[in-house]
Amino acid sequence: MLTSLAIRDVVLIEKLDLAFGQGLTVLTGETGAGKSILLDSLGLALGMRADSGLVRAGQPQASVTAAFGVEDRHPARAILTEQGIEAEDELVLRRVVTADGRSRAFVNDQPVGLALLRRLGALLVEVQGQHEQVGLADPAAHAGLLDAAGGLERLRGTVAETHRAWREAERALATAKEEIAAAQRDEEFLRHAVAELDALAPAEGEEDELAAERQKLQQGERRSEAIAEALAALAPRDRRSANPAHALRSAVRALERLPAPNTEAEPALDALGRALDALAEAETAMERLAHDSGPDPRRLEQVEERLFALRAAARKHLVAVVELPGLLATLKERLAALDAGTDRVTAAERAATSTRAAYLDAAGRLTEGRRDAAQKLEKAIAKELPPLKLDRARLVVDVARKPEAAWGPEGVDRVTFLVSTNPGQAPGALDKVASGGELSRLMLALKVVLARGSPVPTLVFDEVDSGIGGATAAAVGDRLSRVAERLQVLVVTHSPQVAARGARHLSVAKQVKGSRAETRVTPLDEAARREEIARMLAGERVTDAARAAADSLLTGSLL
Image 1 (cartoon, rainbow, N blue to C red):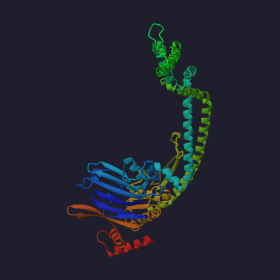
Image 2 (cartoon, rainbow, N blue to C red):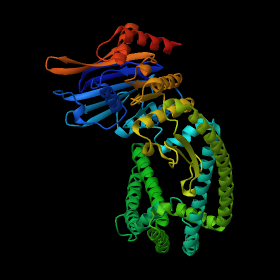
Image 3 (cartoon, rainbow, N blue to C red):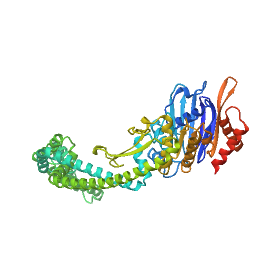
Image 4 (cartoon, rainbow, N blue to C red):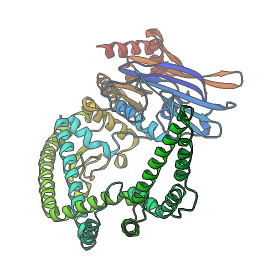
């Protein structure tokens, strides 16, 4: 429900902070005092159209902040979660309008789009006025209201669940058909491509291995030349050429010819021996290297043929070589899907048929429940209309089957509340047939009956008592009080009979300060409330008789 409303610089209001409670709150005041400004301000916070004319003269901007207490199960909390907005104890809607007509919206102090503000506002407050009807006048809300009135929420949930299952089955069937159709169109290509790639048999990491081997083979001739040159330096074929080994052996023989004893030459002889051994070892290693590194033109040709074949296949299929094994697996899966596609489509068709039947069964039971609830609702509304001076009016709840394309989670029915205000008149849309006053009272009668199932916790009635008085006004007050037992109700009224039924009473008055007028709102205590109702009864001059009549109304309202 609405817990507080803070208004800053809106038309005649400089600063106003109001607190609200449960039950019926009445707002009274003379014509032109500014009651409509309060409703316009609340409308701003709910996302209604902004106008630069709402900004108080001489001020750069106007702002309105409306705070609501929202139950954990209220759908507004799901929207906050969906939008990533922290759901605090209170839900605070704020709107700022600048003097040039631009506006900004906030929810719990986070900037939001106007569409979200309106979406939340529609779940929090319903406005019923002579010139603007929000909620019951919207045919889109009628099915939900009828279901709530008939206690059909659980069955409606079953319909929504079976509809979801049916639509999922339909999507699965469409996907299966699309996949098999695509596979059939590409069947010849698929079989050729799979055969070609199967024959090629690409392996993971093969391209890198082949490229490395190719580079090594291409370098083979240069490696062989280098090794041969090194061998020639150690052991030239021309024996007359310098030969390190021959030189070392000559040095050994020379040292050995030294006269005995020649122990001082032994270290040199040992070193020369080690050098000879090292040269022999080096020569053996280079010969082995020359044997292993010899150029292999045939192997180079084989490696290049394989590498070029892989790259050609990759270009053909517009993938990298590394992706060829995965592509082959995918193409094989598509072929397998084609081969098994008929069975899959058949199974999907059976699932779609069975889920559709389940949906229609649940929707059919919902339709029966709605028709029964419609009859009961029509009878209940008929009892409420005569005291509201609508004894010639008749409400018709039309439950008609939608075309299949319009079936949805709410069922197969189009539920519409229609009204006829005169005998012989064909029932029509609520906001097209009834006059402003009739429509407001008709909405009140509907709310009396439907209050239990209303998802909106706060109702606002703007001059629902327009053009009536006496017993009819008393009947309006009684019904507003009954609705307020379940919902928070705010009503702008000129009727003392209605004002006397309020649990809270706010007086709206216009005061002139210097050269400027200002609207003030004052919560009334019991004495001030008695005086205000007496004023409403007597006019400008309040008499003792008017005060006595006010006492009678107030006493009667408490019985």
